[in-house]
Length: 142
Image 1: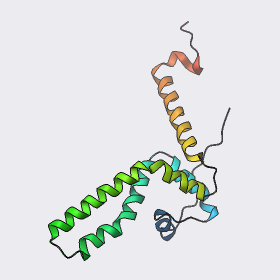
Image 2 (image 1 turned 180 degrees about the vertical axis):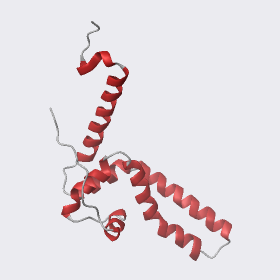
Image 3 (image 1 turned 45 degrees about the horizontal axis):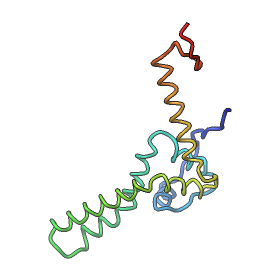
Image 4 (image 1 turned 30 degrees about the vertical axis):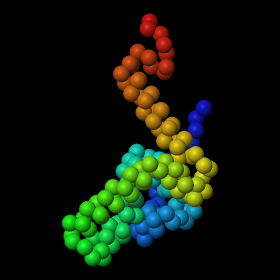
């Protein structure tokens, strides 16, 4: 059975729209294919981490600038907060991306399904490359 896969979106959000998107805001319906592509194509984990760093950056800046203690304490607190924030972000990465896709109007589970289909195609391509005698899934060694 052949399924429809997310084609690369031609339109992208403006920098202001992307910043709002990074902080959890929705995008216009016209950018829904871009959201699906952003959360499913190769590199989606890296893009998720970048969005998380953008979300954490105001807290890191406040910790470094506004807390009235020595710079060593501020750096330690900022780094520790950044690490804890990234840990939670990575722990809930799949759920967060699914929520983004659902806000864009796609059914729940769409992003995970598309990522799994992509991974399965990559696995099949690796097998075909390593074992060319099994072209087309044939199990014959004739």
